[in-house]
Length: 320
Image 1 (cartoon, one colour):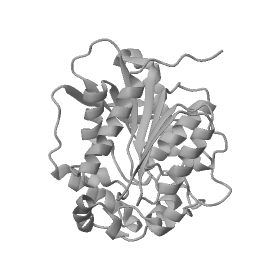
Image 2 (cartoon, rainbow, N blue to C red):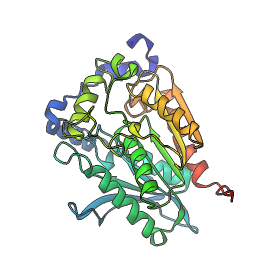
Image 3 (cartoon, rainbow, N blue to C red):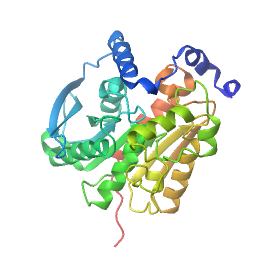
Image 4 (cartoon, helix red, strand yellow):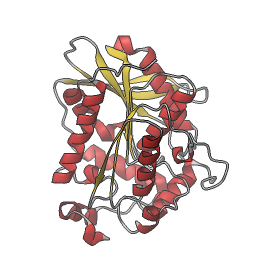
């Protein structure tokens, strides 16, 4: 399989230390140290600050990281961003560069959620935190200079899974109305039994074994059983109607390839407007590990362009 990897993406993959989810704390510590060693560029036209918002009963305060333009001209659309990390690792700060791009290029205000992680806080903790953040975002849109009718949600990997779950949850609860969702290569199928999930092994950033461990921690060992909610694993949903305009993508060498293809197909059949990209030669999280590669630059530009297009377009007229 490694011979199929885009040549620009191979070198850093070979240097990437395999994740050891048997020691989550060590992985988190290593990630934090690596992030601290990087000099993340800050766009002078963007203001970044942290804020605590009301959370669910078992977590009274949820930290969000807010990115907004320094100079505001009228109301802007809003984007709730949800970081990835297999439901067990990750922080909002890891996506500082991308979130600043959303502000400067897609002309929106971004609220990124620092949700609780498994195994300490299994499902539904992360989703509850994200729903609380979305509810706060919608209710405080005016204070943030955001148009409440133009709020979308996006995230990658586990963040993509939470994006898909949050779209289902807010639809079913008649919660805040979303105009857009962007679940990038989403982690949505706890059965971990698709051909792509089984064929991707070895050090490919994320693979079958890591996926099994991530789901096991997130679902408290219930993964693959009948006890799993569709809001935990959105691939279990039967009815995808009524969901917002969707942009998604996946690498052809990503274990989530087949569940994403199935998701896109079922969204399309349910009448949801969908744009989808399949990137050949690309493994999981390729654009994060090797952001300067040509295909990574193309993918990142397409993410930002999708946000800009949908959040800034005129709302379609609903038929009566």
